[in-house]
Image: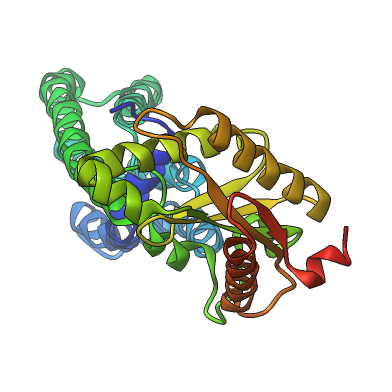
Length: 350
């Protein structure tokens, strides 16, 4: 499966809570390093407090943005910004510390932070954004002159390689879960025989008041299509023949909807609901095209025709629109089949 922005957004949302709590923990823990500073001084000394408390600025920015934004392309870089800010707050405190012997230990501790930051990030981002920590430490060494700088690199480089491998493993593990979830959703919302949506998709395109929210809920037309005398097809050619007819009908109908936003749903055994965003006149014209192409080309098992009821969605409970389309379909069936009937309220709109 291709890893695209949809995949990375899903991964971010799955690990978002962990990412947020990690930022909170590392920010507050960074403040507590003031105590270790006092230990090195041998007394309480407030000189490093400004550097240590500076982490509250990127932390506050992160928390504000995180509460309002749900885009991994913004939150992930901000998370790593907090991680690097912890490094620079520590570097700022080191300027005043009398002993930098333990700097290599602190460096490894800070690097460990980046293991968890990689959970919510695209692996390739994590590799680059974590690698910048060596840029941080190299710049700091130009004026701090770490006594254990070589050891920091010796310990840090394999640690970094390990982080990269962990990020890769996490992403690969989530990919397997993501693929399984996508397959479950595919099975849940799609008809296994024809490949179009099944009735479960309605949960995704209506709101809590049962109003259509797909395509903004405006300029929607509803068509209900039924295969004429389908029981005769099953009785004559068996259910396997009937399945072939169903797939053929759907393929021909879908070919006439590629130019318009739509949902085609298998509504019942041989009934199909088509929701389109277009003018009433265009919807009626489309229904007639679907009827005509099926009449002339659906012949793989036997010649078949369809009847179609068409109406418009005027707001409110979507069931009212479906019922009006069903009433129009009933009239089409009782008027000789193989025809399109336009519901009365829609006739006035054309």
